[in-house]
Length: 255
Image (cartoon, rainbow, N blue to C red; front, side, top):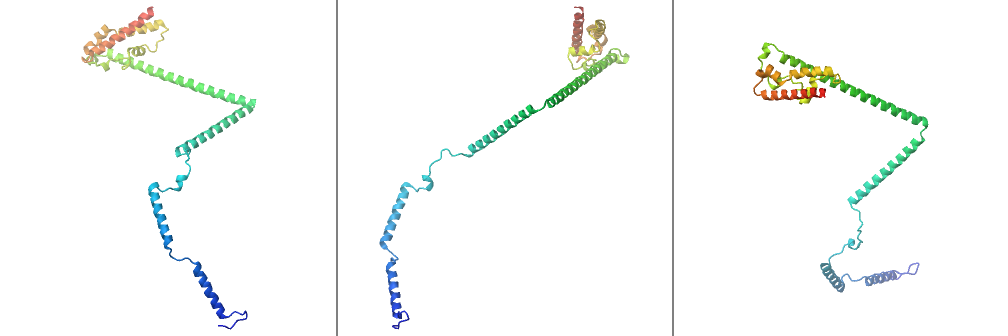
């Protein structure tokens, strides 16, 4: 224990040095339990609990500044929509300006060609419109001629029939009205269709023929006994109205 080594240190010296080091460490280490410290910590905890119960617990966000201008979803959507339409409007204006500039740069020959194309298109549309009107007029004329032809045929069958026809009862729909569902004026138009009203002699001749056919007294002589009782008065009233309109036209020719 007392034999020194080459450095002159004995085992006893090393043992003493280790003991001193352990003693120093124990002196520098605080005690594991400090009653006074525990009492202070407990007192602080009680005060903290009482403070929270009285004033509440504060979050970190409670101390942040309030942003009154914060943008909600609706404001954001409105802003995006406005920016979108502003952009589209600006783009449309740019394209319009570019188009206007391009038109100004077109040569005289191009402008003349464009005007010629427009003129040709207008003339084509005009021709097609006139052809349509002509077809419509032809169709209308064919319809009127068909009504006039059926009217004449029914008059011949009803008013000029044989003995078998004389015994047939006539309802309102059996009378050869020129326009069965039309007005008196429409009926007269069918009666006189095909006659040029400017040709007064021819027009007067056709008018007299129709006056004789629809004169109330002559009509009654031919058909009154054959009329269905339920339609008799209605038929006679319509015949009278037709006769009056034909007489009015005849009076206008004398004026």
